Image 1 (cartoon, helix red, strand yellow):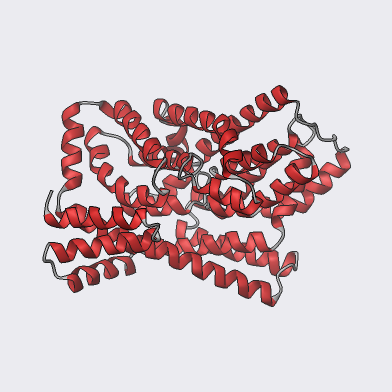
Image 2 (cartoon, helix red, strand yellow):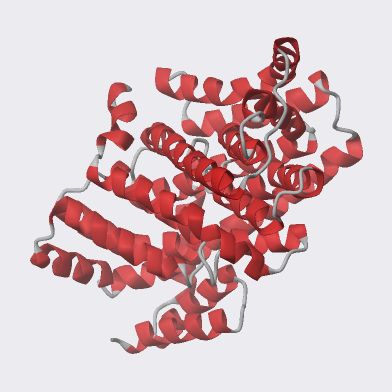
Length: 429
């Protein structure tokens, strides 16, 4: 290991242990590498900024963030909840089923697991824990597990970042995420059904048909957004970046003109929070570019590719190994770090063994989402504990029953690539 690479790893590990924000830790580690290896810091930083400036795909990130924040502020979560409850709330453990269904619909608008947990998730927690007296840990666990669907069903901010790193088509990735996202939802609902029967969770009341129709009518406009976005991508009428702008515009139209729930003060707060979240994401990307520059110069990725190629694993064996590696890394590292630092190391190896990069991306992203709900570093567990004022151990005890079906979905995606690749191929990608 060279002096520069040792400096990068040492600084990053030290700052991560000290709980320094990930973006600053990666930036400091990248700068330490440049200094220790005697490279022109100004030139490298200038090249990194020029590269970022030329990536128009990054425009999708603030648009999707804005759309999700507007949807949350415009009381759309409540409308989606009422519609889902009218459909599946009558089953045993019905409110947990409703939570999964709302996450599926909201995922077509947000693209962020944390946004899903903090928006519709808070409504779900209030209804399950406070109104229907579900166990608090179980309620928070199913909300956290359901929120992992958000970055898999398009739109998806992590998919945009993966496309940026791999060169894979963002449109193909968006379409590839639909079936896996629905599989995740189905697997979680099966787990809910098993737990509900075993614990005797309460049933909801069946609503008469007129009430069901009213609830669906109130939610029909926001429910059309995912169909509009996917239809535009499928037909080629819009690019992914244009789809992101369309989502933000549609959300503003609903909040301002249709439901009229966005006042000037609320709208200002939404734009301010969206700008803050966008800055955090872009800082992560810029910092990751510095780290990836060091990895490229040191030829680390080529070494990894050579080892994997020499092992003669084949595509399935390689993906199984990657899945295991990511599940372990997800226990200790933030998903953004794994995506922006470790995945570029694995991409040359994926190409070398003949893995389709769209398929690889979906397998990677589902694995990273599982990492969000596995202790000790599961971000969504901390989010739910903080928002619900719960002890973390209450959620950790309950989360494993939902982690298992998600791992099964990963195995299915590895063994049957068509689950991810059929829709992109039908669309011509």
